[in-house]
Length: 178
Length: 443
Image (cartoon, rainbow over all chains, first blue to last red; front, side, top):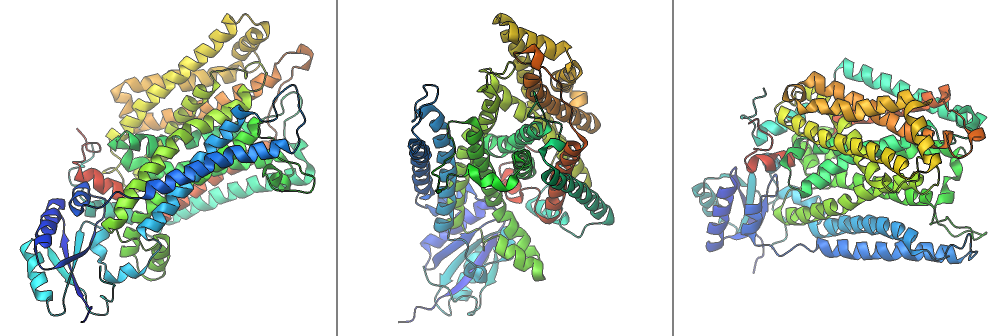
């Protein structure tokens, strides 16, 4: 059985048109590949029914790591010279809290960046082959997959939904099916 | 009055992308001039390294002069960038969108500039690695109970976080530029945009990540200038040893930063024809926030003097009397007038909607905030407990050269940025338009 697919993109200017095209696509025989857009439209995100992003877990793990590091490093370095000066404690939680606080934020942000890169799959340059440059301007692009020979039906579908259409030829569409 | 009704996503792209077209001669002359200024500053620093730190005006009793004044000044400038990009983002204040990118850029370059001053003041700059807790033969470690080490941690965190926040926010816009560029430029922007295609599977993580960025940057912005204030507040020097320093410094930082936002935005708006995007309403919103921060700063000045009087501590009382009427009285009054009284003018709509008036006021506040740091940093040690140890300070020519060089470096970096990178967030502007654009449009 052949797994090859062809891809057609419907381009829309209005968020509401994208939402209604997505609804119609779900009920059709074609399979939604992905949706592109110039900004994160809440309506479209809602229509795509994504699961909650896991970036927050990376932030949390980063933050906890930072907090622990922010206390462990000052404590470790202080006990190397346990000479009491002016009756001040060797392990001083209050000043160390400042270090812990800052490192919580630093590592939390580094965790967020890592989470963002891993979850969003960037840097990645292969997707640019199945992409229309108008999608970073004022268009939203819905890419749908069809079996070879089914492009004209998919093209008509997008035109009926009020979109402009871009077909990707076979060299463009050597993408893994989803 | 600007016509904002015609603003569409395509128009936004067109306005912003037009700023990236090859620059004219005036631009390059200005770049050359600022570069020259930065080189003069560098030469002064090299001279100081060769001859010794004594070429600066710092001496007993004032060991912290313009190097620390400028350090605090630039950290302060950085603050409003994060206020605009992170805090106002969390509050969903839509008026921040047109100026968020330029403010973030200001933050990154201001922290970089600020970070130079401790290095300059260090003298033997090549020993800066002593501040890093690395395993070493003698088992010597940094003292983490010192506010100076707090500063190292806070400022390096701030620079890292603000740079990452700035770059992450720019990725979708870099993709927009990539899609409209050709040749080598296209290749450069393809790499810079990390192959971003605006898939909604990417957007959902991006939106979440950006929210966490903003949520983490918000406590950071409060903490960084608090930490800077503790460099002084934790010392027992009269005029420094005060519990109000943290909120006082944070308010002052945002006050100066907002003024710098106006100082940068007003010429940028004019030069790049951003009137449709950075509307008068946006500038007015910044002006209104300046009234608020100006009043907080004025309140802090009053409370500080009140505490000195009410404490009945003769040293504190003498310090504040001398601060207001003594050797640096002129500096004190420049600070008070520029930071507290001048912003009151912004209560008048006619003034806050006048570009010339706004620009002039923003410059005056910048001057005032520089003098605030002068009054605090120099004033304390110059007139502390022992009358026989009192002394005055004036910056040397080398210090002035370094200061001028760093100002030139900051404006040079900003100028290079606005001509090569998107100085307005096209993505956020499109999002604003999709929500009706009422935060930007003239009422």
